Image (cartoon, rainbow, N blue to C red; front, top):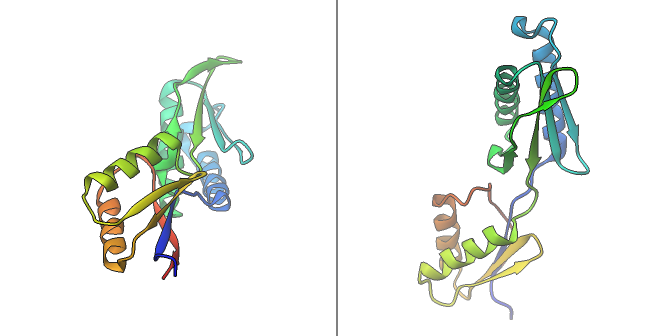
Length: 166
């Protein structure tokens, strides 16, 4: 019989992101400080990329705050957003790209595996499978310890646990 195991993933619900961005666009359209200014929020779900465009860097930062607030309200992990530098764009506007991380990047996966090995839990095995990790152990208690340790640690991406096999 195979050892009990579970998967560690880091996924973002793109539909929730889209809903949050639609709410953010409505808020921007109604806010006084954005009246008459060029401000837009674009989202490319295929590339998992957000683009904020505004008149100046101050307004781009205000757009970012609105977007983050809406994402948090819809339970989207903002840890998975990587904000690029604001760059000048056409028509004297400022543009900023934000990358949405789907899955666990390989360097983070290696960091998580090293963390688990350093925790000195007996017989716990961690393996990278694409953009997720599979944690296995003969002891269900140790698997729960691994979950607890991973929840307490910050790896820069939001972690979800699932696909538990007993």
